[in-house]
Length: 273
Image (tube, rainbow, N blue to C red; front, side, top):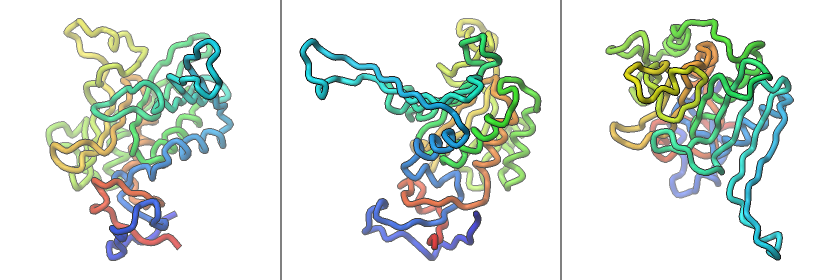
């Protein structure tokens, strides 16, 4: 749903975000996750008939009361009906960081049920807009073969430049950014610990570069902490990354009640009625 956005409807700074009404805001790549990133994605996966499992790991001493049990680790796993793809909410786990931001959602897929190993993985931190992860998962769910690569990387750049993003001057075939130079998308070196079945991803001692993967992030100001980050291992199909990129760069506004402090002054908003 689209609505005209007007900067003449500011939020009242004296009122906490959670007390505000709903607003249509844009651009969506700066709109954050509305403080409900788990619910937005989990509700979608439930609607797609993915099964959810909660894994608890804790410690309990002899004769300890149930209410005193210490839960050390909690993971919510969502599994597709064919078990070839899955998504994990890992924010409550022992922290795994992308840059300086903790990972919230970890999505993977495999080629067949005979292999327990993921062919590729994608990672999303808090404040990646929930709508963007949902569109990525819709594309993943619709794929008959979730781990096979068909499209070329150009598809990803076409998805964002069609929405007005600019190609990187230094690497026009592997990078783009929004017109305000805040959000970035690039194909290149993959951060450490990103899981992928390509054997080159495991060779950390050799001189050969590992498989290039897509990375995306929003940096509200030069040198400031990132608002969010996303990482795709080298074997993630480019058409799936294009679904993410097209949704991220979409000009359609999103509904929000909570705005990121670092970008709220850059957002256009109109009351939802």
